[in-house]
Amino acid sequence: MEILVSPDPEQTAARAAEAVLAGLDRSSRRPSVLGLATGSSPLGLYRELGRAVAAGRADFSTTHGVALDEYVGLPPGHPEGYRQVLLREVCDVVGLAPDRLEVPDGSSTDGAALEAAAAAYEQRIRDLGGVDVQVLGIGANGHLGFNEPGSALTSRTRVKRLSARTRRDNARFFRGLDDVPTHCLTQGLGTILGARRLVLVATGDAKADAVAAALEGPLTASVPASVLQWHADTVVCLDEAAAAGLRNRQYYDDSAEGLPTG
Ligand code: GLP
Image (cartoon, rainbow, N blue to C red; front, top):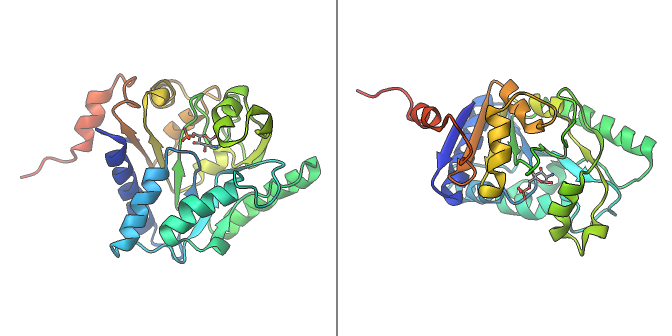
């Protein structure tokens, strides 16, 4: 794991954007496949990618975007459905074509239809040749995507119940808690591990405990983001507040300096 701590959220976003662009360059597959997280954590990163496009350093016009997750039961076009969120926060910002945005179809509430949608999503990711770089945030309870504590470390895309904490955390996007869906379709932890590079962004002190548990605690389904420790190319971009609980901080800072020069 590469753990990069920056003084503030803006510099965290800039470093995360560089990690994304380097990962896409390295994979050299064209068109590339970029895994997309929702939530507030990656918004600065997406804005940085937009700046890179404006500066002629990046081009997402042929890139495929692959969402991590989607709510179950929201009607198509609902403004808080993750398809709409990603159209606004990613496609509009970085120039990714809307018809190249893949989001699991959570519009049904029928179990069999949702199971079929999950299987179709896994197949779609395989057909695209897998994800080159997956952008990730982390839930305050350590979730990745919507893989809540207790999620199998090898899980694939499937229906999950949202935890009470996640529903409370996300109520701010809806009229109130009662309007927050109870279920979702989410890429599994095994699906996420299949991406060639993972880039996690976390800022703010509300994430400090989850970050410390994920990066320095045991690999456990109780902290789904601890599965990052299993991946050979994970870049974690934190601000000081989110890094506050890390015990091994000095080593990460030393490592980030790279090889000696001269
Ligand atoms: C949401 C998303 C996750 C996201 C997390 C954190 O529920 N499903 O992919 O990482 O919550 O959100 P935020 O970045 O707003 O704290």
